[in-house]
Image 1: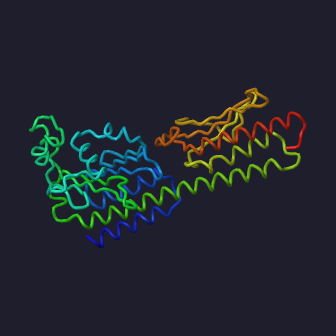
Image 2: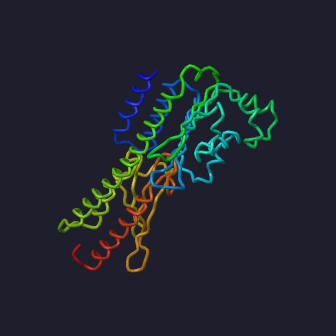
Image 3: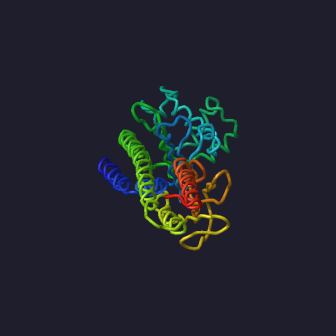
Length: 321
């Protein structure tokens, strides 16, 4: 088992070293972990770095994959079972029942028959459902390990399987060590992905500046070159398209297809709205800050719109760009 989990950690690190969007990274490693450990359901909850209120919630089952960013107060609304909600809260706040045989010293919850756990602990956890229903709906193996980072509880690692014996021979120590390695990888990859986005933004602004410095370049050519620069700068370049509408004329480098998500900023020149610049995702993507867009991407698009307004004003008034 030690070698197996060490190898799994190595495979996750290899994926983390690729420059891919966060949601794609999460999907790939969640599939890898679930398949590697042969469990029916994997759930990850992770506090966003330097945030006290937002968490990533990842759920991977044989029925599909779900990734979303939620606020702290919404966590309980995402859980179908009240008993797990109470378990999550007690583990996250380090207020679990230390004397219980269901918990390790580190706060990991573990049972090979969750249905039998529910009955004696019903009153303590505030469960009001019928005993038989609770057992029928909760008869599975369950493992919940707290994510620890710099001595702080930053999330949870949960495995579930209908096979009651799946965790009986594994023990918890190795899985707890793996969970802490995983939390470090998740947090570091998140930081790296944000840094990559900032580098892409700086590169965009530098290239945009070089475009506007070209002598005798037309406004139309400036617009088309800026449109060409936008997709590689956004989080999902392969599904990103850009469009500028100026004085009722559309400027695009290719026909706009499906529009699952759109980020737009007005182009205001001398107090008048002359057009809009849009960034479009042709496929559905997980919500982050503003829909699937980072708040930094919103800021960048606003800056592009402001810079375009300056360029248009200068061109309209015969000034040097």
